[in-house]
Length: 94
Image (cartoon, rainbow, N blue to C red; front, top):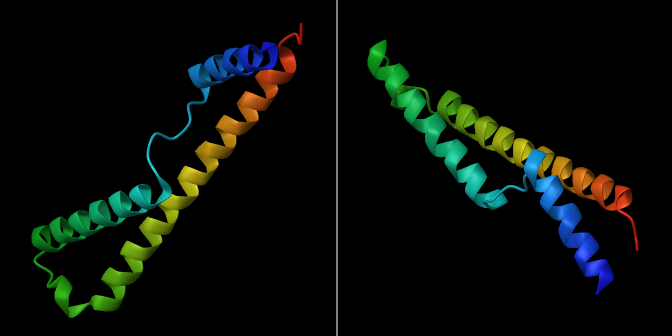
């Protein structure tokens, strides 16, 4: 039971400065792709560019933004795990 209390305490401290991502990896990629699509749509409307005539550029942009969202999610999860491990090691086992 002491280990659970130690784990909970270190989790609480780690969450204060490196919170765990509250969404899933798939949700992060979907949000990134949708926002990239909307940004491309607005870009095309503003500059009067027919984005449907450039499907490769649109697809590559959406895929790269989705991949970037996945990378950001993984980095944040790794930061959280490192922070939790660091705080767990700092707390007294007794």
